Image 1: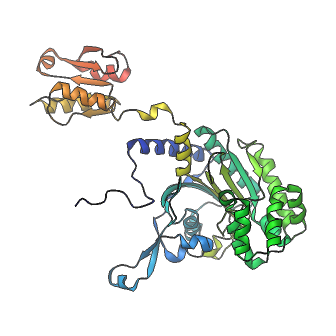
Image 2 (image 1 turned 180 degrees about the vertical axis):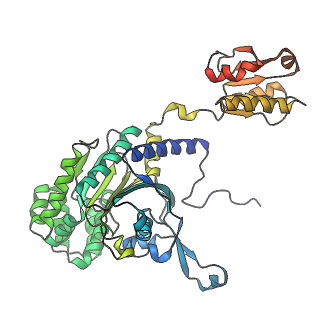
Length: 437
């Protein structure tokens, strides 16, 4: 009986066209982030279990992929390692471990897969890539403005024009919850419910809040404040820290007007972000036809201190590669030349003359061409048919007759034109585009 060939649920195989699309997006992300002076960083797929637990809140902890102890400890059923849940907590560990080797203001980008034991859905997988930027060492609102600018430029370069960067502040949310009478002990779980507003709607969030122990009147007041900015401002201004947090948001909004993010950033009082480590401004990028976001982030000034004992300001933004790919594919946003064939030229092979075919292929590659060699002697018709099926433009033929004349026959499969070229000029001619053949 044949074995199951599908990958594990929530995981995927990436065929060549998939990899090319992913590579295109990653290339744009990297180029933009480097121009904003972010440096590359990579961390291991596996982290010690204690590194990850307690950093993501109750909901996040449930989604960590834990790894059983191995060898003689396997029977214990205990875990000591876990697949990384995100790229932010590993960064905090790295900063705590290597602080003396890093600059005062450390800006890094990181593009690697993460794993979550989540329920797969459209645009949601158990293994997926995140494209992160983070800035360590400064509490200035310039950090948020630059980060939002970089993300906005990435989205614009990819072809998005209708995106919105939603902005809020964790202290504002805390002030609002205090102002409507939600006890501090209930606020973390209330934020988890509020974070689902786009997914389950107002009634769903109200019922979820009540189920989590929030009074019905308080739940209704929270949702009403989200729809009326004047009410929101009035409530938060009366609570400790509310006015300062509101001023911080206003500063970020004003700074964004001097960047590529101009016109795309808006204060969104209902934005919550479910992760528990956020301490200040929080951000999310969205487009109209996607349930959920293209990415998000925020300030997490206390996270590094969990590892080092030293409070170090930090802020980050994570773009979800998979979400971006889903929307770009549905909108047909990829450049047409991404579908190019693997090879520009295919070299045919004759019995007893394989070495000559390989020699020609080597010369063509040295000239910068992408070259395939038909792997075995076969009828020319079959070799040409295979080349056409792979989208190859040029096919070369160097049989005994051609070799005797010091020539190579080249056929353009797109136009049907065929001509002979002097052997020593083939690589130069094809690489230079100096022939219609």
